[in-house]
Image (cartoon, helix red, strand yellow):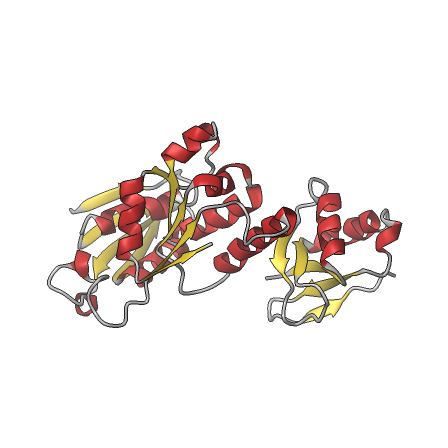
Length: 85
Length: 200
């Protein structure tokens, strides 16, 4: 699997993000990958090409600042954080 | 020339569903014709899980997959009973009687349900069947994410049974995205046949 995931510090943030992103991006709810340590077990998966768009959409939620992070998941299961340029 | 299943032009999971029908009917040999590589892979996976060998030939974009029942795989005299015989019965089925996992917050329960089917769709040792009744029938109809995961599971040979009475009760029978419209008899039969039934 080669995709991106957005992980959260709380389930509240995860479910808020799901509502905010669904319909705008092809997000899939999935359990947080083992390679990523995050407080919340709910993550959202989406295609790598949408990373910039998802980031911009999440920045529309000031109340969620600092509560989420985007990772790139490689086929071998390794996860690398995507840091904005 | 034996049984020929024409799955050309059919989208996932139909090729696997058609092949499974022949297997459940006790066919020892049959051929499936498909026109895409994904169908071939899924059919080979189905064959492995059901104790069949496959040979694949391709010509002009058409793949012919010959299924042959492997002789040593059977536990009893007839192939159809091979599943219930034997001490190590690892077959299992999932019963879903509601839209959400557990009691408490319905939104959390909904997320959990999506994650359950995602996780299942990514794993090995799949259940033989997933059975839906009452509120559960809303999942393969109105829940796009769950329906997508169920499609993937069906493509790997998992039977998806959805109670027709319940679909009619909720007025959503025409919205079923994946699975067979079933009834109490068939659903109870699948529960009895499985080594264990996991109820959500």
